[in-house]
Amino acid sequence: MKRDTGLRADFTDLRDQAVALRREGLSLRQIRDRLHIHNNDLLHRLVKGEPPPEWTKRPNAKDDLRARARTLRLAGMTYDQIQLELGCSKSSISLWVRDLPKPEPRHTEEEQRALMNAGLARVRAARDEERKAMKAEAERSVGALSDRELMLVGTALYWAEGGKDKPWDRREHLKFINSDPEVIKLYIRWLELLGVTRQQLRLTLNIHESADVAEAHAYWARLTGTDASHFNKPVIKRHNPLTRRKNTGAAYRGALTIYVKGSAALYRRMEGTWYGIVGAALAPETQNRT
Image 1 (cartoon, rainbow, N blue to C red):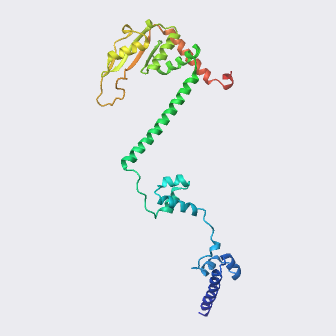
Image 2: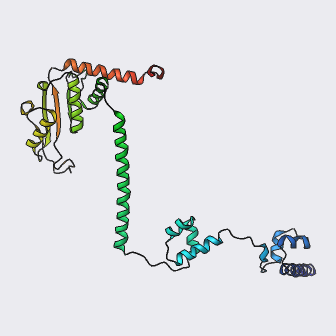
Image 3: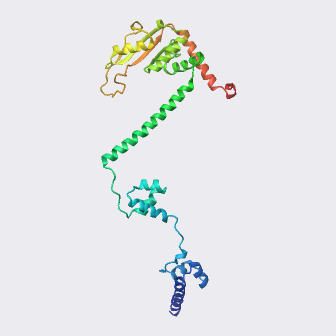
């Protein structure tokens, strides 16, 4: 019991000395050195409740930002606007100004929606312009095509979209189907390079029953430089009420099949050219250098 009493007396005496030194303006380190106390936990207990002297307080680099953030909030700025102004995080802004009243909205919901839609429209318009510029630059970079280049392009196009011969089903003739007018025009130009005349062409329209068949026939005839005598009976696709078609409207004119009569030799030439392209593309790099 006497030992406990002695410990309490020692602690009380030390605390009185530590508090007195704290009030004189000493730091924790100075008190520690004065009283020879090297236990941090004991040191903090001795000065508990006593505020540190002002000179020991480090200036907070964010105090100025905090004050400015509060001023801007009171001026009616949103978190986003304050963040743009000060360049600090929203979480810090929220911590600094959460006790302040929210600013009154500057716009009604309808006005905010209109502003948002206008902003989105500007973003979309800028993106559209960027897309157009990139496509236009790529188009200009192509320049003129030589006959050899057109031969290679047309061959690759046919191999992707045209009918092909199989060991179990001999079809050595040129037969091509597509619905893209630009693709059809390029294919016709390739056929011209091969020496194919319009008289060798047989065309078949593949179209949905709800479309204007007569107008589609006239459209493809103009595009290919042919007339009604070149067309077979159209292939009409019947309507399925369970499907939701997207290829509708005035721009829908079906797909066109172009068959070239007497084209077995041309087909073999096309297939050989295709495998020549593949072989050249897959050859070792040193063989491809010019």
